[in-house]
Image 1 (cartoon, helix red, strand yellow):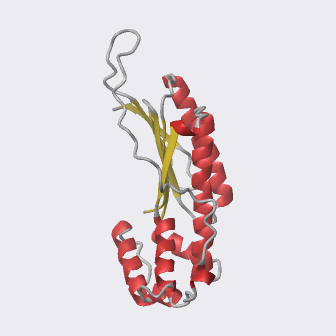
Image 2 (spheres, helix red, strand yellow; image 1 turned 135 degrees about the vertical axis):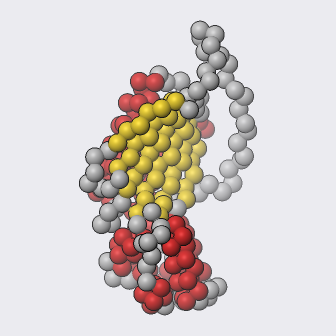
Image 3 (cartoon, helix red, strand yellow; image 1 turned 120 degrees about the vertical axis):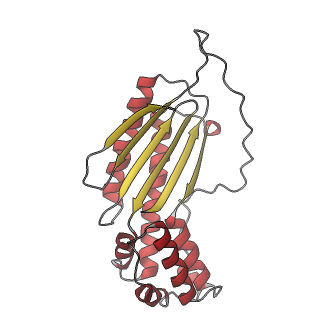
Length: 232
């Protein structure tokens, strides 16, 4: 499966009970799943959320098969408009996850929270930009994208011929391909994080040697969610 978009977040200096972390993680996942269902127009996908205690660390992923992603892109009439639309949908779903988690875990100060975004939505945008600027040919882009998808999602490769045919339709004028990225996170210019010292022992004097880890996922959009709780 391809990681369409990955959102990592970290809320520092939060002291929550194990029960609160479990409840908030479930709330965040359920709200995110509903948002994706309404927003992301793909035939199928899977989603996963992992939350760990300490400072609250989380990672949410939307995963999709290469063939489903390609079909979803082409359903919008052209490769360019399909990539643009799905990238915006995925980016908006990612922003929703972060803001909802920030609210659920009561992270009220921007200085206490951080996030990172990555995934195929951003990679495809870069491919389109490189082709439109004439930095690479449509054929080269097709080979690069096809090879990447075959490596990341074996057995679900997209026809190289079909992919090349779609990429040749990309306008060479970069102004025609410019995406509205105002809603996309900009992580540039942030100062490096200073490592925080290990927290002192808890109130009863016992050192905390493990921390709670909650994993919640849906294997497909119609499957029920599954929850794993462990200490790592």
